[in-house]
Length: 159
Image (cartoon, rainbow, N blue to C red):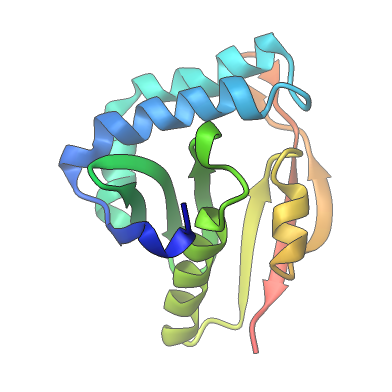
C-alpha cells in the first residue's frame, strides 16, 4: 500500500469513536518499548473524556487519514502553532501516513504565517519529529492521573 492511496480529510464528530480506538490501541502497542503498562493506562484513560476530545475536534485543525472507511491515522494542530496529536495505526506504521498528516499541518501553519511550531512529543515519536526538522528544547515530566508521563518539548522554525 502506498501513502497516496490514503485519503486525508478534516475530522468530523462521527470520526470520534475511530479516533479514540486508534489512540488507545497505538499507545498500547507502538509505545511499549518507551512507556510502562502503568503509564499506558494513565495515558489512554484520557480517551474516556469524550467532551475534551469533541472540543479538540471543533477547535483544532484536526485531520484523519483513511484507507477506504477505516481511520488509519489522525493529527491535530492547536492554534496553528502546536502539533497536539499525531497517531498512526500500529499496522500502518512506516508507510508515510504520519509524514503526510504532518505536512498538511505544517502547510496550515505556514498559510497562517506562523514562524515556529512546537509539540510535546512522546519518546516513541522523537525520531519522527527530528526527521521532520524539529529540535529538542527540553525533557518534560507530566503528572497524569498520578503517574509521571514524561515527554519532550520540541520546536521547528518554519521558513
